Amino acid sequence: MTPLKAGRRAAQLLEMMQLLRKTVHTSMAIPHLHLKANLTLAQMTVLGIVHAKGPLSMHALAEHNQVAMPTMSEMVGRLVRCGLINRVPDSQDRRVIQVVLTARGKKLFDDKIKLAQATMTSLLKGLDDREQVQIMKAFETITHLISKSTQERKRPS
Image 1 (spheres, rainbow, N blue to C red):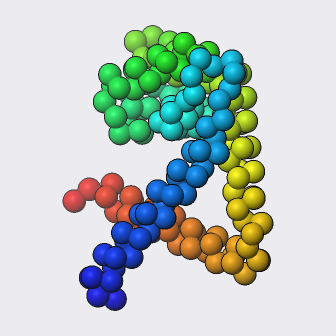
Image 2: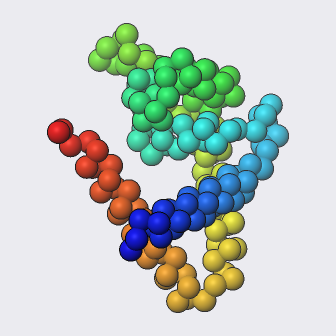
């Protein structure tokens, strides 16, 4: 494949990924009346990371999200005020603050994921089995490429 074709396809792929991201985020953006405002995608990402990985230090959370500590501290502060996460001292080193999901945060995240899954299910229903398998294989390939690229960047030179 020529570099020009690869570049065009990369641009098209990025556009498609942005559309998918926007679709999923929009499906999760149904406001919860008990919150004063809807959560941003970045805040939902923080909830998702803590949901998946369990308690994390502020430093690890900022590093995982590739943001500065003040940015993460502000984001975590808002989530604490919403009652979705708590800051707790680390049991081994009280200087370290761990971020943990509250029951309310877990329920909110689980509810939002169900909404996103319902949206994706609705979209996939419009496709036959062959088309659904093609999409799954394409995403598996993309995931593999991203994973491989990430591992290569982490290797020491």
